[in-house]
Image (cartoon, rainbow, N blue to C red):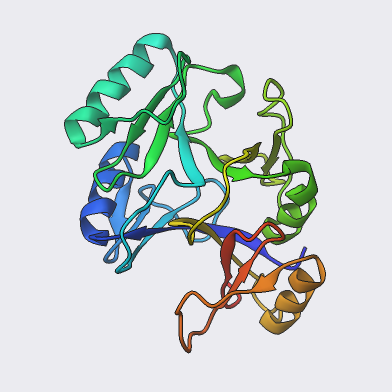
Length: 244
């Protein structure tokens, strides 16, 4: 276990505005300039996956390959959440989903997310049920992401053919769900995972371990920074931070 998942990073045109939207959407709080996590949260802790908003010059193009699924407790709660989110500035979105029991929406910068129908597996999980990532072959990259995140196989995608789920071994917080998708990756992901070694561990050794597992170095214009930008075996970018 060279690293652990510490937060989700989201590119933004206006990080402060998007952070305020998501803080209200999840009933969390804005910490610092544009970090969002539950009140009283002690970073990093798998009980929740914080959101970190980053200013970028590029505009969003196409559907995101990573999105959030939000949990609900009942059909009435789902309907009420959709209306509440619309009031906060979200919009309904059509990504070709057809007639499904969940509601596809987008935040004020067009980032898609889903408000799920009530599902027993997510009961009591908190506002975020899962971080969902499109993959060409979920089974082929599941082992890599288990290594990168320190998470173990979960049980949240039993009804989705070909999908794989992971969750913190502590049994708390959201799932990471890898879903099969035939859509080609055409641009840098606007939403990505950030991982870090445990305190006292060696960052360079963690980079080497992940590269041995199939990660590749990526230049997204980051310049000279303290973290390492990598991509998984399918080309999805993530960052390996200093030990946390």
